[in-house]
Every structure is written in C-alpha cells, then in structure tokens.
Image (cartoon, rainbow, N blue to C red):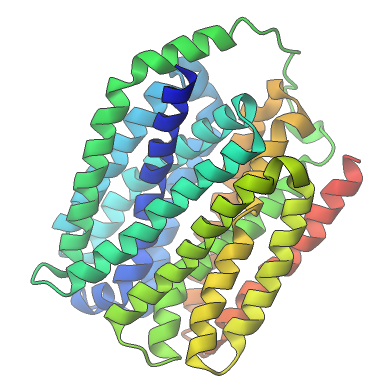
Length: 381
C-alpha cells in the first residue's frame, strides 16, 4: 500500500506542475491575440496566486475535515476545469475569471500534499516528488510550443493540458481508498498539542520571508523568461517558449540529483548550495550573449531545485508535526504572496525600464533568501 500510495503522490505532483509554466510560455503570443499589453501577464498571474493564498490559509481546516486524498483529487478537478476555461477564452476578462478556480485548486493541492510528504517520507522522496512537479512544469511549455505552430494556437495548448488534468483527476478519485487507510493509521500516533498562535514559535517569520523570496524569484523567472528571450535577445516566440522550458528542466534535473544526496547532506546544506548556484546562474543570465542567457536559465533552475523541498521537509522537525500543517499553509500563502506581487511588479517596471533588468530583479530576491535563511538557522540552532 505504501509503495502504491507514494506512486500516486508522484502522479499528483506532476499534475500540480503541469499548469504552472503555461502562462509564461503562451504569453508572447497570447497578449497579441487578445490585444492587451505585455505587462498584463502579471494581472492574470496575480489572480491565480491570490486564489492559492486563500486556499493555502484554509488548508489546515479543510485538510483536517476532508483528508489529504479528497482535497488533492477535488483540487485537481478544479484546475482541470479552469484550464478548459482558458482554452475557450477569447477575451482578457475571461482569463481573469477562470484564473480564480485555477489558483484555488493549485494552492489546496500544494499545502495538503507537502505536509503529508514532509511528515511521512524522507528528504529524498521530497526532492523526487518535487522533481515530478518539474516534470509537469517542463512538459507543458513543449505542449504549448507545439500548439503555437498549429491552427488552434495557444488555446489548443491549454485544451491539451486540461485533458491531461482531467485524466489525472479520474485516477486520483479512484485512489481515495488508499488515502483513507493511510490517514486512519496515522491518526493512531499521539501528537503534542498544537500551538494556537504559531507566530510565537521562533523562526516562523524568517521561514515565511524566505518562502516569499523563493517564490518571487521562481515565478518571476518562469513567467518572464520567454518575454526576456524575445524582447532582449531577439529570439522567435515559439523558440523562446522551448528555451524557457530550460528553467523548469533545470529545477527537475536538480531535484532528481538532490534526491540521491538529500538524506546525507541534510536540508540546511542543500539550501545553501542551491542559493550559491542561483547566484552563478543569474550572473550568466546577465552576460550579453544569447547562449549564456539560455544556459543561465537552466543554472538558475538547478539552483532553485533543492530550496523549496528542503525548507518544506524541515518544517515538521523544526516546528513540530503538530504545527506543521498550519505552518506549511502559511508558508504556501507567503510564497504565493511573492508570486502574486513580484511578477506583476516586474511587468509594471518594464513599462518604465528596459526588460534587461530581469537578472538584477532576480538577484534581489536571491539576496533576501540568503539573509533570511541564515537568520532562521541561527534562531533554531
């Protein structure tokens, strides 16, 4: 049962990653088709992320009420329906409407699954599971790139991914019995009383700011990668969509490798290594050569690889299993706040400043993560 359940969770993480890179890959073409400014990608991204913040904050209550399995299956269904809505949209306001369920579904899956895996599985499984997110996020730009070369264009790309999501939803609903058995067994384990106000726990604020910085960097890098390659490096939109996938491929490959060393190195070391690699990737991205920009995206992705799963995996150990679901929900909300605010801020800045500030913008969040993660280490030492 345990082996089958972890396999199902792998599939759920692929499902979680599929929609995340679609908007950035489609946007150079999509904004022209809908006759809206390039910067409007930030508006759609902010609405999606706003939904994830709401569902993340409610995750503790909802997951305790309905269980991880049902929350995961139901939320995947919600995102599948939202993606279908995107594929049928021909006006910008329609994208904004369907962005709401899109975000709510994604946030609920993220918080529930991350806490479940952090408690029940080792660091290597957390890395490999987030590698599966990267598989989904890496596949979808190629689906979109192929669709952009057909008559259906970006709408065909969204429709194809929605079909995949509906298929995964059916599989997850069929697996609900396994989740119920696993969670029933887990309820027999006694836990300490939960802290009502988790902000009283040392280090919580630092980890929330670290997550804010991480998701601000990751979402900005992913959303604007294609536009940076098109506007600054002069690459064709369809080609740029494929090369933007290098960022997500870097995350995927990095998490696959981290899984082999995660238990040996530990979460703290992996986070430090990841931040160092991000710095090298941003430097490469800023160099005035087309090849360096492409390679830099991949290196930044590799650096991002261990940070998210390592921070999540360390949460039950650092703050207690009894508090982990609530704190991970707050972490998700903080992370998605970074995703909601920072990519559109970059879009607004590009109305005043050249798109070439992209590497510098990413560097600011890398510095924020370094400062706050080291502060957390001192507080919980």
